[in-house]
Length: 117
Image 1 (cartoon, rainbow, N blue to C red):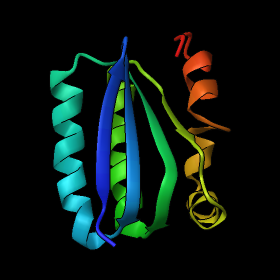
Image 2 (cartoon, rainbow, N blue to C red):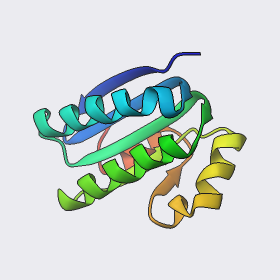
Image 3 (spheres, rainbow, N blue to C red):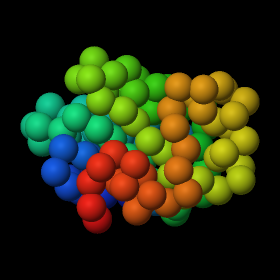
């Protein structure tokens, strides 16, 4: 299943919604699209909504980690929300949840950043 992406900006927060499979085939394209959004939207924080993501491999983790570093350089925070058990296990095994906060859903993530949805 091909990866579908949706980018939405609310105040200074970029919401990245992924649908499908994030693997080595789609990781390079996602990286470029995500970087363009960070550069051109004037955002500080990122919420990564994985509600519709069925699969992610290590190349997907690499894309997320790279964007996390970019967001930190902006003085912002990255929050991941709505993660299915398989992807959550991958994040836990990689140690990503030690640096990226997990919230139940997009509304909680926005609220924790002080943004009304």
